[in-house]
Amino acid sequence: MSAKILLLPGDGIGPEVVEQAAAVLRRAADRFAIDIELSEADLGGIAIDRHGDAYPPATQQAAREADAVLMGSVGGPKWDGLPAPDRPEKGLLRIRADLDLFGNLRPALLYPQLAAASSLKAELVAGLDIMIVRELTGGIYFGEPRGIHRLENGEREGYNTYRYSEREIERIARLAFDTARRRDNRVCSVDKANVLEVTMLWREVVERVASEYSDVELSHMYVDNAAMQLVREPKQFDVIVTGNLFGDILSDTAAMLTGSIGMLPSASLDANSKGLYEPVHGSAPDIAGQGKANPLATILSVAMLLRYSLGRSEAADAIETAVSAVLDRGLRTGDIASPGGVVVTTQQMGEAVVESIS
Ligand SMILES: NC(=O)C1=CN([C@@H]2O[C@H](COP(=O)(O)OP(=O)(O)OC[C@H]3O[C@@H](n4cnc5c(N)ncnc54)[C@H](O)[C@@H]3O)[C@@H](O)[C@H]2O)C=CC1
Ligand SMILES: CC(C)CC(=O)C(=O)O
Ligand SMILES: [Mg+2]
View (cartoon, protein in one colour):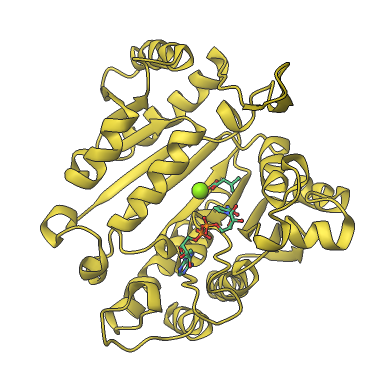
């Protein structure tokens, strides 16, 4: 039976990078005899324009029926004036919640060819391999009540709610410990337990789960210090587990250790093998439509899709090897180029990866 893969190109550079990643997926499927069936639907701003809804019913049905979803990015200045519940980004939050994609894996891995592009000195990032495990369907992005209301004195007040249940903390903690067991057996849980009650509970539950994983070393760090440590001595980390907001911020920080946010893939997983795969970056309106976007984060997300949802590690490995080979050949999009170096387009980079898959 063929695996159903739904493409959600989205907005801005999303369609540009998904086009290249889909070509890589087709090539890998051909090469490794993987039976796939690709379809496409609208999510985000494009869905608002076409259907008046950032996560329309047809997209919802296709997403529920798919074995895996490959997404580009959503949002952009065109929709910035909309109220929060109607914005493109809400479409992304809705699909994550609808598919119960609570476990967001965001690997920050330095390709040695890109050491010069890292924001840090080469010796601080050589061999860098961090896995950020971010809780994705709870926390302050989803907590109720939320909104902007008017106070008695006429002034307006905005508010959001940072909320986690024990069950939500437990399942993301388990994912982090299981992930660490396949790596260096170390988990650092990042919270703000000196101030926020919700993260005091987070710390307590993570420690409870840790008692079932005596082979994994657990440490805790406040998020402000974690942000500093990531740029001071990033190789101290193996797996970082944290909530939705902190994970969002720390993964963009980690991106620059690898050279560019254009290099960071992600997998958003449910309790089974279903997943949504997307680059960590957004729709990059400043470079959209110019062939400047780095497609490698989305191409590496295809590798994660093959590994986690289709169980085809050999095809995933082949894509990662192909990415390394094009970097060896010196191909660079603008975000990872050295000053004065030759810069290729989004399409040229994608085609080079397709040709390198053997
Ligand atoms: N998962 C998603 O769909 C996300 C959507 N967004 C949305 O994207 C829009 C823009 O947000 P920003 O804060 O500007 O973040 P962004 O990640 O889109 O861009 C930040 C910077 O990184 C650069 N960049 C991003 N991806 C790149 C790539 N593949 N190659 C080369 N350079 C790249 C951009 O040119 C920009 O200078 C907003 O509407 C935001 O809400 C933001 C983050 C995630
Ligand atoms: C809803 C998204 C725009 C949040 C985000 O920035 C992300 O998931 O990386
Ligand atoms: Mg983000």
